[in-house]
Image (cartoon, rainbow, N blue to C red; front, side):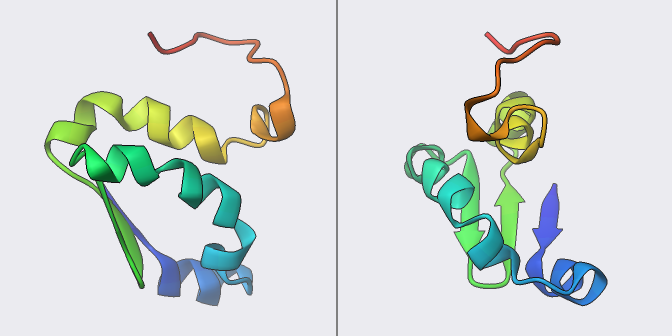
Length: 76
């Protein structure tokens, strides 16, 4: 899976790199493990990272941002 930051910026009128800076910073260990690639214009979940896609996606979910408790199925 690929998230194109330029497309998001055009669609929503915000810079995803700034808007999600704290979430993207949390992905650093996943990048070190080869699960994601964070590039200036995109976020790519690698083939190995596909098994952890839900762990990546939950970082950007409004229902779990800002320390809100998870009220639906959790990842292991």
